[in-house]
Length: 412
Ligand SMILES: Nc1ncnc2c1ncn2[C@@H]1O[C@H](COP(=O)(O)OP(=O)(O)OP(=O)(O)O)[C@@H](O)[C@H]1O
Image (tube, helix red, strand yellow):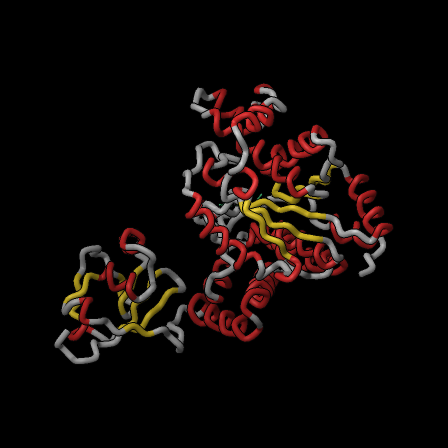
């Protein structure tokens, strides 16, 4: 396959990138790849400790997809081995350590979600335990000898913890080294990552050179803010829009993003052509409500298709804008296991309105739970479903269920 001209590739690849280190080397690598008809190996590392992908992850995944579309080779490195170490990148606390088996399972789920953005036929998945698990202690010493403690402490999160007198275990220093070793192993030409990965990505360049390899180009992408508009989008911060979430939730959550982030979302997570971006910017400033609705539609369309986007839009208009109850409510019929009198917290969970009883309790305390539009205040409330159903149970602005009476009347 013929690779497109270098300038053409560079224009697309530069879009939205925060930093390319060094940019001229990327152009040079693209030139050589074209002349020799050899694809570049582009690496993206992922930490499988939390496998739910959100729009933030798609910023890097979409960039990887662009490389694929030009004919380059994408290698997704699932850090099943490094996941056991627990990287604190961008965080002030150590992450949970997982077993190899857990990280493998998460890795598979990560791959399935990532291929909603990536071209599955051009995505190679590698688990880094394949080479890291085989290293002997002497190999590890040799690896560790390539970096000084002072250099390690330059990484912001290590530095902050060190200054604050918080413990840093020695094994945590091995995380960036192991990740850099991945680049040596697959002979990466380019590595992608969010700006929080800058230190780790650059370290790989040094390690590759020490192993007589050409150093990879590091491409850093901006970190997308979450729906709260301040912190980076992250599963653990409760501000994420998951790419596997239901269309209605995706739509509604996007509508809750602060207006000043509309343009950033369009630029970083949608496929709107670059030349249309200035127009979008103007529109987002002059009519944020309509621009945001367009953005929400676009996002739902990308992951669920046009029909789902229509439904999600309608649902939002009906429930949030008009404050009504939608026509097509999911229904839940209590089962005999629910008992004749079912605790409201359990009922909400069984009807898929909450993930846990603690979430249900919190929602009631916040005044966000209603039964037939009447606010519930008692977190310990029991409901005699045979007597009280059918009724509409609502949690928050967007979650509804019609609770039906048990099938065999009062005999539950
Ligand atoms: N909000 C975001 N915006 C842009 N890139 C992100 C965002 N969150 C993660 N990434 C990038 O996605 C890649 C894979 O990240 P990783 O699997 O380590 O997730 P993570 O940062 O742990 O996400 P989370 O905080 O949700 O658990 C990294 O290069 C990371 O920088």
